[in-house]
Length: 135
Image 1: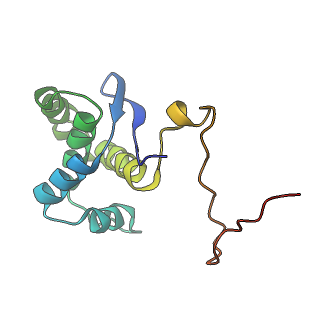
Image 2: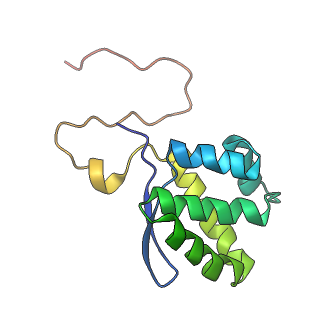
Image 3: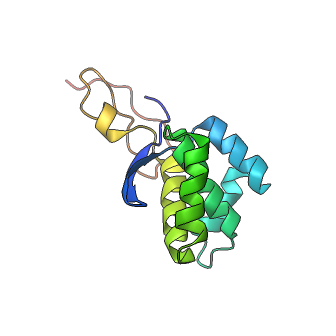
């Protein structure tokens, strides 16, 4: 299983793939001068303390990580972030970053793949998973 984090969303008049891979996360951290973990907390706080640049850069880099050319990503962000109601960008930026931080694989690519083992879901327990085989 890989840490993929891609997500397909309807935005800016079409369907787009957003993905923050490690390269995009490193660029995001450098661009906004903030750890991705702190940025994640900033976007998900009861009263978010993230700045507009945090959202616009998350969207731009998410588009690039999803395969869009940098110039096209920058143009879409200019048109649909800089010139639209800011609240629209807040929700989108949060979803893109959440996918990068929380999703460990792309469901449409790996969930039904034969022979793939899924990671066990956490039940909040701190004990190690059982290695016993069922009878």
